[in-house]
Length: 95
Image 1 (tube, one colour):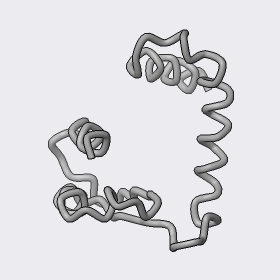
Image 2 (tube, helix red, strand yellow):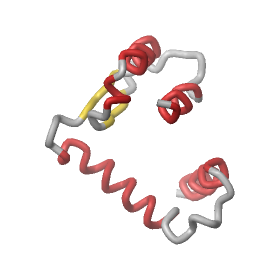
Image 3 (spheres, one colour):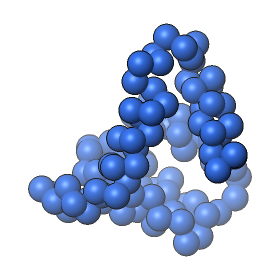
Image 4 (cartoon, helix red, strand yellow):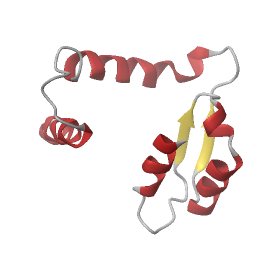
């Protein structure tokens, strides 16, 4: 669950009432510590229904396009995930 802890550690020390975080039904997203952390932060957890990939089709499509345009073929361009994140920020700041 290191990836989930890293993501959650980047949240500010405030509540996010009304925010919805959608994920699949992976074991890490069902873990009690993960669910409690979201609850404390005021984040509503949303999960795809089992065997229903259409629940998340819009976001899957978005991230598929993002990866194909910003990552695939450029794997050696970025030294680490922070450089990749900065490139995304520059792209979407312009839009």
